[in-house]
Image 1 (spheres, rainbow, N blue to C red):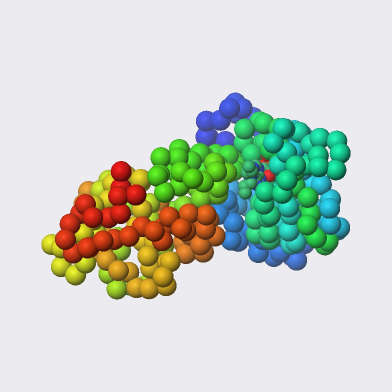
Image 2 (image 1 turned 180 degrees about the vertical axis):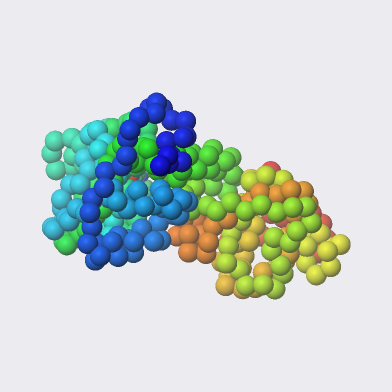
Length: 301
Ligand code: 1OR
């Protein structure tokens, strides 16, 4: 049968490529499914793509602490998903790992079970941007080869990441984040569309998501719909208060035009927007009963 994949235009002209298939035990399959369950990188794949990825992943146990899985400066070969254990990320600002005790540079992060790493070199045909070292014993990784990564994940997941990266660069709230932090947010966003007049958030409801306005215009009101308190345009955010304060929605938000929003679930919001929580909390809604111009000007220019 002809797969959808082979009908898609791609850099490599049509060929007989099919992903490697590594037979797995029932136990491996269930562990693997559990490991990738919460990972946004796999949530936009169709059934065939998921099946191909599951088949192509190979188990890679990392039995002891301090094993270098990736060395900064090397060429990229595999993308990794963490099933068990955790890994530290080191970056040497001068480039590749240097000889000597400080050669790996300083620790800039940690990746835990359910997370993944090693995508950048494969996406951009670039040297490894960081060194990844096991932070404990008895870790388990799943590795995806470069070709399968490029043929399947690049056309779906990472095409989305790139699209959202350019939008997120223009969002004032996120301007203090590093590009890598914005990439992680891009992976976690879900797109939703609303026709004019539809209620995106209803006052009094519990809050499960945070919203970035990707396209169109929306307005917020409290109580009476005539009582408009805020106007939102592309790049603005809303829906943060209920999540920050664990409180019901403080206002309704209604689409003024056709609207496209990018949403983050509560967990992702807390995990990924931690660095801008201060800005979110300082966003004050003065005199919400009186006018659209009264939101803290800090976030309204
Ligand atoms: P890679 O293929 O370049 C190293 O191999 C991997 O480390 C990289 O893909 C990412 O998956 C992962 N900057 C660059 N790469 C990072 C970072 C990172 N964190 C994890 N990786 N930064 C840390 C941000 C918390 C920015 C440091 C300036």
